[in-house]
Image (tube, rainbow, N blue to C red; front, side, top):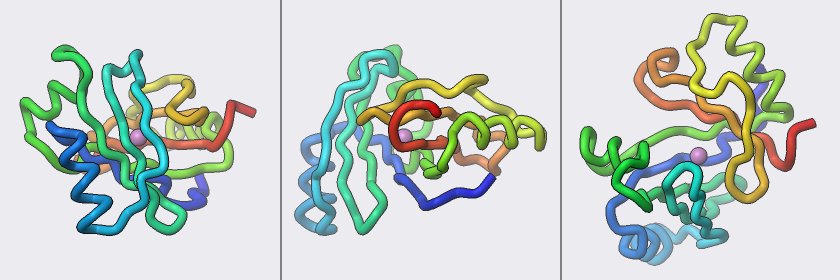
Length: 137
Ligand code: CO
């Protein structure tokens, strides 16, 4: 697969408002987008740095995967989003290389993207998300 860019670095936080203030005011990132993704049980804030984003994530309900992550590992790096031209073909290539995937098929992500997650087991401990701008080709 050929990544275009690091799309985002996702950080799990307990207090989204406080985290947004810090990343915006102290680190100078531009708040670009906020969204609740009900299906994933998360609320996100996207802050732009050059052509990439810092994605702050907080759970919207106690049984969401991000809630479980916070319980187990505390706040911090949750996953890295790799921007690709075509999520479907990137995912197929990864599967063919033996990577263990979480999403067998690409699915809709936030702000109209198409995404698929690859298991952290395959990538040395960090959850990987493939991100394609727009809907699936
Ligand atoms: Co993400």
